[in-house]
Amino acid sequence: MPQSLPDTTPPKRRFRWPTGMPQLAALLLVLLVDSLVAPHFWQVVLQDGRLFG
Image (cartoon, rainbow, N blue to C red; front, top):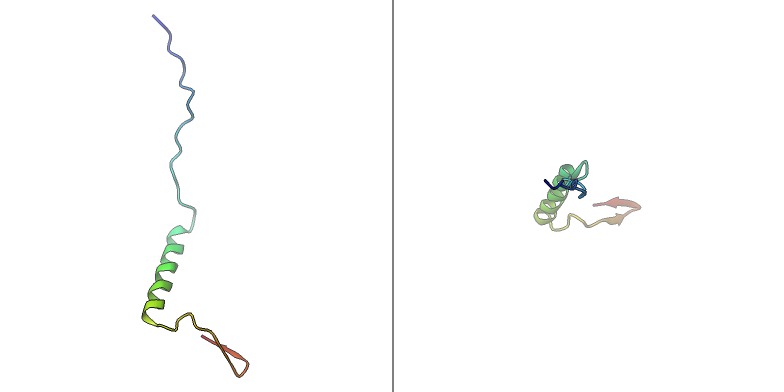
């Protein structure tokens, strides 16, 4: 009987999201909703030497 050759292909690695990805996605979602609700959400103004925004 012929001998089979060992499998030389590397094992497949599962894709894993980096640590903290759910928190980053939630932050982006909150910032997106805030910018839609408040039209001037990203506006930063300097008044009397102070930053407002």
